[in-house]
Length: 546
Image (cartoon, rainbow, N blue to C red):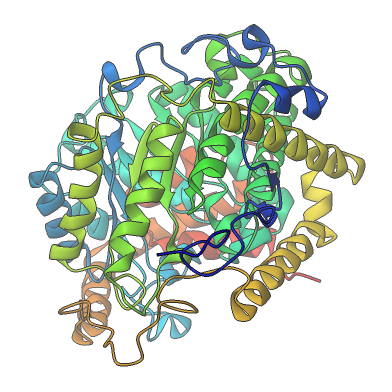
């Protein structure tokens, strides 16, 4: 029993509570009420700041009924080894209740290298599926109903080529291009900021992005032409405010590039989509999603003059934070992922991926992937949080945090504008340095114990094994099998036709025409992904950061 004036842990119960802040450094009051709004100096205006779900500024969600209309898309990210192995995993996930595909590609594919390239050795099929040819894409999509299941592809520098491979498979099946739905990530700017899988310099890379916008506007009206990604920015070490600001600043740069290419904003903006991280501070994350939605609506209306309400909508996919998963006490990751997925649901995501608990140690097994999917299904069908639209809306603490995240992110975007915009800021290395600074501060807080990581720097058990059960192991023979498969593909094709198609692509790259039809022609002529990337390398060169 506690002594008078003492709490159960022996501390002074009458002492003022210690200051606390979110991960982004936003100070947290002990309790929020109407007086909190007055102290913030920005009176709360429900009509201006909230509105109704399905109406600008979309703070409360982009659909009037949200998940009462239908649940979010459960899109588990998967891909490893060969196309056949990944295809088997997709069918397993769909049979388990997944409602959309999400394809992970290996590093050589992301970097425009075929599986038999010397730089690909040791990396084929490791971080995702190896795709070098139309033959690989046909196997990857075998038996999958492309006109009924939406497909997300996490690919950037070679996004146009992977999209063309996808279209070529659909064309061979006789499926109308207008029936295809999905997303290609296609966000090259965040590669320069946070991830590093770029190939070409920023200017030609932005041309490929704009060409993809135009091609899909004319050929694939249901396809999301870009997924502007804050996820990797957050994984690199940014905080929630930086994630919003840098992601929306990238979005501004893409809108400007598309307009410079002659596209009307309302012709392409409704197909823009976003990809955010669902991190561990529940209230800050929910506020982050709501603030990003409101801020984007204001940017599109006030800066770009968008008139179509769909152009104002920030539609986003969320993935739980890989950087929060721990190798120590890995079963704790089930709880972490649940909290993070709950934040995405309360924040109004259109689709969600939940990480598997063993991903700090290996690619997920079938069993751990199923648990991750079941986490989403439990939230959708048992937790009740999908029964009410924006259930936390109006809560004093949440609205205060939403306003603060928006104000801080808007200030960062203004700073980027003053630096000449996001492309100029990236070339100067400014966002990269800001993320590195924030990542260092976070790691220092973990090492000093100021930031608690359960099972790592507190509540650790030295005698506890890192037992996550059986782990996924990639068969080392898969790389040799993929290389042999590619050799057979090259031997069976019309090599002259492939060379002529890549030569025509290079010639087009020297001009100003849209490159997507040329890439699609090269794909159908059986040119490989690496050959197509090399044709563009020969014209555009490769980017080397200063």
